Length: 430
Image 1: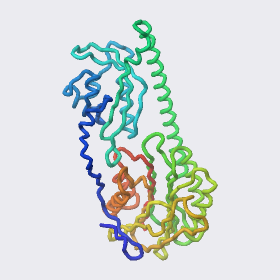
Image 2: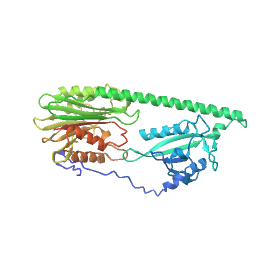
Image 3: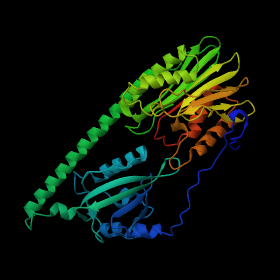
Image 4: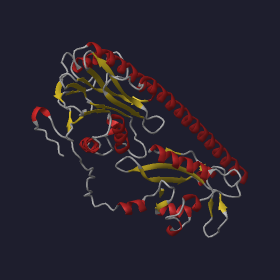
């Protein structure tokens, strides 16, 4: 299917698209650049197997390329068996695993990591390093390689003490102790971030409970938090029964993350839910929300979409404040993006200007899907590609009930390793 922007009454079908990386026309030989980099670099797979090493790394490690490539990292670089306090492999493994889990760089404290002397198996030399590990992500945000950049600081550790062996040892011990203290502080910070994530998730769960049945209509809701301790954001959903055979449904997305975003989310969700129950339509509900948001710190640039479903007239009235368009799956398998009433996000539009509102008809057994951008957006990818993925998945699973369809969309549209942004989803079988 292809988008049809000239379809009657604003209807256009969403179809599949393929992400395409721009072709390089620079003529740069990146393999040669990698080898010429002055910093020592290893490329490591998520399974911790060495994929490549540049010349600077080989010189510093005193190894030949064939001794490294394709081998398990800690088989090539084990701890010094004669040092009972050696922690280099444990610390490095923990850092690499954090990169794979979070998709974010990880800077390590100074490490003592002894290395076997070239040509002298089993003989280890005392060495100090300053490592940084960074992910290389694919189009779906999954870690496909880890860039391990390391600077040797052995001479720096020993500098300033002249030739006095005792002074050198004391300086090395002092620097190493301070580095270990810094690493312990970093670990406590990570634990604190993990605790904050649990608090945010608990707050999200309390404010986004499973909805009560709305009449006899079949609905499913999902909230999928982002991976990473600090990435949980302010996505929300809401369903409310209206007089007559009607329902109000909304999703929204607060800018920012952590506790602050979750608290703002709770305030805005409650305000929009209350407004939807007393105003005449979705545009007016968003207008009331916009007025309220001016008094809430952190609510600027929030996006939201509100829809009123009327089963008596078989119509959906909707309005959007900068949010991705809801998708209406018709019984014949075509998907219509509801994008004819889109206005800027909260706080980003002129005052005293009415928000737009549009209306669309639906047939029995159609499906309405509202979602936040974490479900469809990917790095370096046009949003139309994500919308096409969503439309294809809706079409292929159009016979599923609301719960099964919601599960299928999350399974197919979110990256296997977890998304870096939250995703909220509401599915209603009309």
